[in-house]
Image (cartoon, rainbow, N blue to C red; front, side):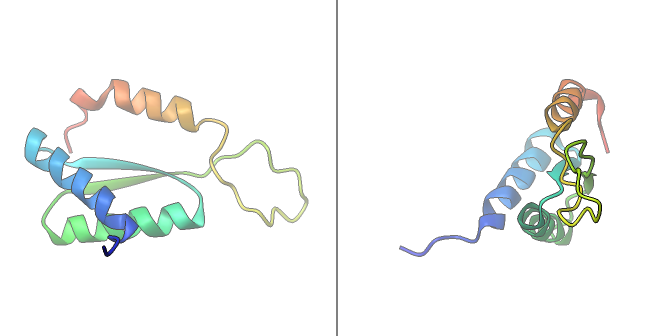
Amino acid sequence: MQKLPKYMGMLCVYVCIHVCYAAGVIVLINNYTGDRLTFGIAVERARAEGIRVDVVINAEDCAITTADKSAGRRGLAACIFIMKACGSQHIFCIL
């Protein structure tokens, strides 16, 4: 059995939201390289299918203490609060 690429699962969700709610999709992504790539491919494919998609990248991080900030800002501290706030308002977010 061949495994589907990871972005296909997210693309299916975007299509379902678009079909069920006849609205656009807001994608919240934490600032991890793999997440940005995988979700980004799914967003590009959804846009190619005519689905309106906007992306919000959560790139804040209060935990980085290195001087060179080599790890980058990953969006760890407030991601749950951002997702809960957006989720609670999803009915009012018509793109």
